[in-house]
Every structure is written in C-alpha cells, then in structure tokens.
Image 1 (cartoon, one colour):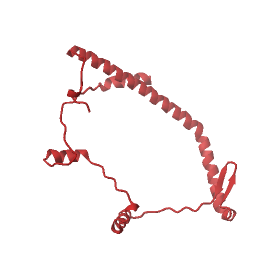
Image 2 (cartoon, one colour):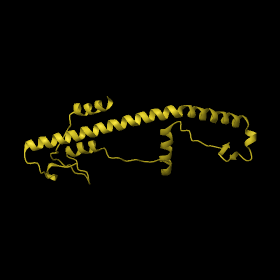
Image 3 (cartoon, one colour):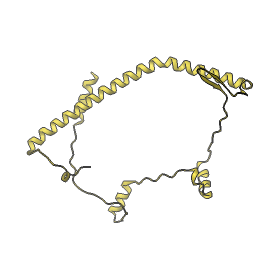
Length: 170
C-alpha cells in the first residue's frame, strides 16, 4: 500500500487534481465497460457451448453407464486380462480401495496420539486482525509492527460504473 509520503506528484492545484480524478474515473468506467463486454461474450459462448455439447454429454454418459452395467454384469469376462484394450482406449475392471472416514476427530486424535505426523497436515495462517488488536492492546510479537499513515484514496462513483455496464448490456 502506498502512503502519501511514498508518492510524488506533478499535479499542482486542486483543479488539476479534479481533472486528473475525472480522467481516472473515466478510465475506470471504460475498463468496467470492457469487462462487461468480455463477461457478456463469455456468457454467450458458454451458453452456446453448453447447448452444443449437452446432447453429446448425455449420450456419452448413457454409453458409459451401459458399459459399466455390462462390465459389472459380466465380471468373468474381465478376469485375465482385467481390461480390454482397444485402439480407442480400454475398459474393464479395476480394484479400487477408498478410505471412508466416519469420525474425523477421532481419527485425527489417534494419529496425533500415535505420533503419525504423516497422516495429516497442519496449516498455520496468521489472522492479521487478531494480531493487530493484540498489538494495539500492548502485546509484542516478534516480526510484527504496526504501520500507520495516511493513504490516498480514489473511489469512482458506483453509478458511473453501472452506467458503463448498462451501456454494454443495451
């Protein structure tokens, strides 16, 4: 974040600042309009793609289900070899083992008690707001300091951005 002291300006008067902000706001409005056009194009292309591929996806799912029914109804055909290889790929049976965890807390406690650190991950992430409040209350944390200073702000009116999006939608 840039602090006011970090910035150097060629703007000399408040009127020049108003003009610069106007230019900035119009630039942001233009970006919002381009973003809206892009989002509209994505939505249109997605809808077209979904419309074109929906019947194929349904057909593929039906064919896959038919194969799965055949395979599970005829396991004797898939003993040796377990899969049938074709020029298009392979199909058949595969042994799959999946872990079902019915009591996550009990499982994690057992892993901790037994020292099995390879059976879970620990993710530590500082909560900046909590640390900031503790520092403000007088606590010290190594590696942490609070920086306070004025920050220059620019906020383009929401109505201007909405106007840009509405122009694109029309």
